[in-house]
Amino acid sequence: MVKIRFLGISAFEVVTASGVRIFIDLCLNRNPLSPLKAEEIDAADLILVSHGAWDHVGESVEIARRTGAVFMSGHDVRALADREGLPKAQILGTQPGATREVKGVRVRATVAHHASFISPEKDVYMSSPPSASSSTRRMAFESIIRATPACSGTSASSPSFAIPRW
Image (cartoon, rainbow, N blue to C red; front, side, top):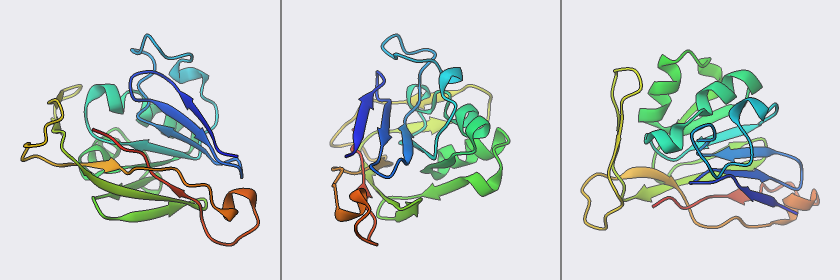
């Protein structure tokens, strides 16, 4: 069984039936709704960051560095992780339409109508609200978490995992 825990704002923890621990949009320390703080996460396999707004990037780079988790995001946030010294071997960039697999979990990035920008200046993040008419499209993790036979360990195929961001 897949377990999902809401950590406030847009942060989630997902644990697959095979025990793969995934975190999404890890803004914890400045998130009054989060039941835990960044330093309390001692294990992670995959960290997904949907876009470059501060409340989505949060402490994701710090947690990936400490846990050794694979860090997956669009190329703007990937560049931030690289600039902040996360080892290149841990970083996977993606773009809308791409599907990547990490530890038997498939992640598909999709288009979202939400603008974000990370400046080369330290701690400068800009974001605009979602808009159906926005000309700026950022990567998002798509729609549904599907339980497949692989979740119970009875098949060689991978479970699909995707999360909407808007």
